[in-house]
Length: 524
Image (tube, rainbow, N blue to C red):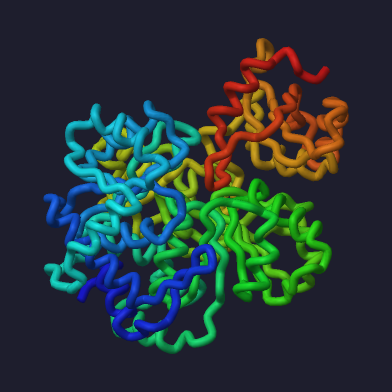
């Protein structure tokens, strides 16, 4: 048996069929239930002509059917395609077409829009709508596991969020996906390299960490967490949508040990909801909050640690293009370092390795188990997944330096780096500074055109209720406490709400457009 996620899931399901890996809206699903329903859906997909290697769209919010669809596709060696449920018709047509999906599984609330778009996508031959139609299809199909052999070379595709450009399909080999994105089903320890090791670890995990998974499953990090947990016998609690006020109740009801979020956009409302609950719920089981895809602000970390002494707060580093790359450590000097992954290196513009101890700023890269390419995009693939001296690497675009001991210092995303008169400024550092102001709820920083310096630092800011009259210059000057003068925002635009993806990831395209449209609100 190979390191194929479907093979590994089936082996774990056989070993512990009555344990509960999934909790959703209070409903519990055992391994046996997920396995049998996924088998039925897999047989249905085969009956409508889906073949190995073909792509199947999943256009849903968080629901049990989403999980069944992931498993069913992998069982028949088809490739699940995550679809952003917030997309408009134009965006959907792009993803439906670009991914070359041949079938679509869609939630009923999105079905009318999906059907209208599918009429323009001739490759899609079948649509199955969650609800009566879906249940009838499953009832008519076999629940037997009689599928052919699978391979570690089978593909798994994650579509990026498209917050800095058009969404792209990241193509993984299943074995690479398991080892890089799922942590070899043993986050924090050596990878498990056989089905026997995976099953033994799952059977032995009789007191698992129960994790509340806030991001939607269409987000790569959420899929990573869910599938890894299934192989580790670690229950995941999902919600249909994000209601921060319900989080304290869920912590008590499900004895949740950890919460996965995407930065302050999700963690801040949760912190406020916990404060507002004022001791109504028993939150003593909460031991960890982890973020992927966006960083916690330092002041929010301090607030959470004050409320929960001993709470572990993790900023994980990774991407759809590289998987789970490690945990960011914040030094007392404010520097962000990645120490925990020897496969993380630094390369120059020609993808040549930069030696440790150099002051050279380069691109953070991953070697070892990395994706193959962007789906049918050789030009962008060559830029992000170059092969140098026979070694493929993933270079998503984050910039950094490498210290003498091999630790990598994270600076920020190169594509968002602001060049102001030759000075390089990374938005996340300025965003962190803005968020230390008591009036700021959320902020994004981007470059705006400037006649003298080419670009200037600019910010869109969402303030807390009651701070609508805050002086823009006060916000800008506050940043001087934390960053050099050339990094402080020269213009700030107040907005009712910062636009982020459903998972909480920053939409920098929107930020730059907003700053360009409202430059008249600049501070002096």
